[in-house]
Image (cartoon, rainbow, N blue to C red; front, top):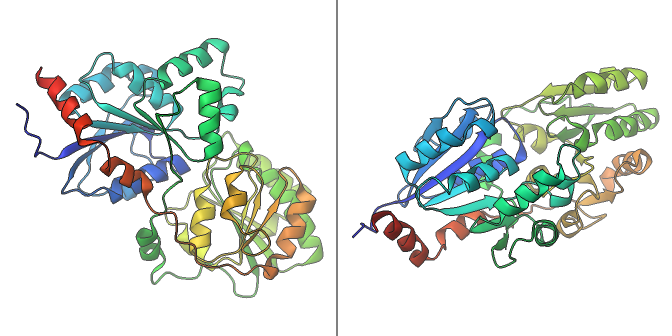
Length: 371
C-alpha cells in the first residue's frame, strides 16, 4: 500500500516566468503553499524568465529548455514520470493543452487549470482556426478542475468549451499582502514631489490600450502641465516604438516614461498619485487589486465586468468606457475627488482550494500508481 503520510506533490507548469499577470499569480500560489505539507515542483518549458526571483527557495525547479510548447510533449511526459505529482497546476491555454495531452502518456494526477483570460477573447483571435477551437474544447474538458477568475468567465467556459459547470471553480486572483508590504518597506519614493504622477502597469501590447491612454494623457497635459505618466511593462511586438512615435506626435514625449519590465513595481504603485488601467480586455486585473490594497485611487476602463463589483465607482475609483480617450482624460483630471480605502479581501483562495481537495481523490491518485 502507498504511504499517505508523505507530502502531497504539486507540480506547476508554465512556458516561462516572463512577467505576465498569470505568471505572477502562479508565483503567489507557490509562495503561499505550506512547504511542510507540499513538495512543490515548477516545470518551465523554455527558461526561468524575469520573475525567477519570485520562486521560493524550497521549490524544485525543472527547466526543459524547449523553444516551443508544441515541441515539449516528450520532455513533459518524462518529467511527469520522474516526479509523479499528485496535482498538476497550469495557467495558460498552451500549457493546458500540453498537460491534457500528457495525461494519456504519464502517471495519473489531478489536473487543475486556471483559465488565463475571457474565453471569448481567446477564440476570436485570428490564429484560432475551427480545428484549433475544437481541439481546445476537447482537451480543456479533460481537466479535473478549471479555475475561472470571474462568474462571467465561468459562463463563457460553459458556453464556448462545453466544460461541465461542476468542474469550474470561481476564484478571484490572489493578492500577496505580506509580499507587497515587504516590497515597499524602506523603499525610495521614485517620483518628483512637485509633479502629479500617474502609473500604468502591464505588458506593452495592443490589448492594454496604451495608445488610448497616451491620447488621453495629451488632453490632460493641455489642461494641467504638472502631470507625468509612467508605463511599467516589457515590450511585445515592438509596441513601445509605436507608442513613442505617438507620444512625439502628441508632443508629450518628455512626460511619458517607458520604464520597461520592473522587478519590483510596488513602490511605483504605493507612491503614485493615481493608477490607470486602460485595457480593452482583462481577466481579473491584479494591478487594480494591488493598488486598492495600497490605498491608491484608480481609473479603469470597463474592460471586464468584475471591475464594477470591485470598485465603488466615484469613491475609490472611476470607471470609463474602453477606447474613449475623452472619458479617460476627464477621469484622470478629477482623481482628487476619490477617497481610496485599504482593500484586503482578496486572499489566496486558490491555495485554500488546493488544501481542501478531497483526500479521497488523492488516495485514488496514489492507488492508481500501485495497482
